[in-house]
Image (cartoon, rainbow, N blue to C red; front, side):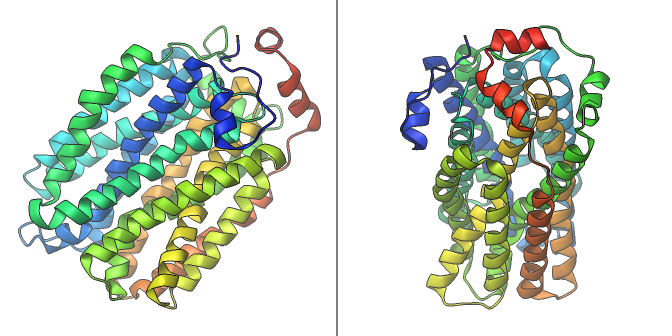
Amino acid sequence: MTGAVAPSNNGGPIAAWRALTPTGRLVVAICGFAIFFDAFDLIVYGAVVPDLLADKEWGLSPTGIGAIASWALTGQLCGALIAGTLIHRLGAKRLIVGGVIWFSLGMAASALAPDVESFTVLRFITGLGLGVVMPAASSLTIAYAARGKEKTTYAMMFAGYAVGGFCAAALASILLADTGWRTLFWIGAVVPLAVLVPIAIKWLPSKMPSAPTTAQAPAAAVRELFANGYARVTLLFWAVAFAGLLLVYGLQTWLPELMRSAGYDLGTAVLFLGILNGGAVIMVLVAARIADRTGARPVVIAALLAGAASIALLSTAPATGVTYLLVAIAGFGTIGSQIMVNAFVAERYEPGVRDTALGWTLGIGRLGAIAGPTITGWLLDADVGFKGNFYVFAGVALFGALVAACVPARRAASRSRETTDTPAAALARR
């Protein structure tokens, strides 16, 4: 059994959902819920940045805010590398459940932090759990997707990230002024621990249908990323992920403050985070359907180019209605492009290498995530303003598009073999 039935001739998310087995549907739903809280944690921090800057007791500057965000993302980098290296030994289910428990407890502890130093350490610890969850959820979802609908299925699952970001921004716009930032952290801690963990323990499958029959040693698994002609591909994907995650985490952390600098009030500035994530949800599902037909490469390039153009235009401070539209397109060009990069990685590597490739691409890409908030904080402290920051983000998106265009296409024989082989044949070949 592959974990998925033969796909129907109809396209789109509905057809991809119908093509899943009952187990596959549970996988997509639970993994999407886990990714929801990964985003919730990130966007909540970005949404409370204005509140933290106004806290005279802590006395944080933009550079300090960026440094805290970077420590959390350093934790995510470590977690992603752990997941990518050990997923075949521990299994995706253990990593997801353990990661959710870890980051939930970390968020609860962060809500109790008495000072900047302890808060920073706790953000790093929380990041470890968040970093483990994303590659494990990605690998499990792709393993259970129906043939020919992998990217649409993956986009459905990963839409949970954008929905989580939207909900975090919406809650922050409602609660932040009255309850303060700690309440939002408590919500991000209690709900996944009380609801998601029991569901995942009961319903997530323990094994992936395409998992190797024997677990590789961690060092051997990583070496495969540079064997069999993969070295160039691996390095290019790491560069694309670096650019993509710099955009995602830079904007998610600083967009409210940048929009405040552009003249918007706090409530509207936080709402832009919701629009950024909402735009990603809507557009990426359409893009994923196209990618299932054409491959992910052209969709990744187009998304990053759209992101570069929309972010550059935001620097002109257009009318409010136009700004909403541009932020939505920027959401597709940043969050949406990274979703499709992950699908591109899964498409480009053979199944036996795919899980490690996803984990390490997301892990190395976290270096960009670390850089994004820090660079933006430096630029704000240097009085560059929102325009200068948008120029930098647009340039990074353009760089990502150019690098993605350099990723060599997968050999036709490899693509044909994956779509025609049964899982048993694939395992025998390995």
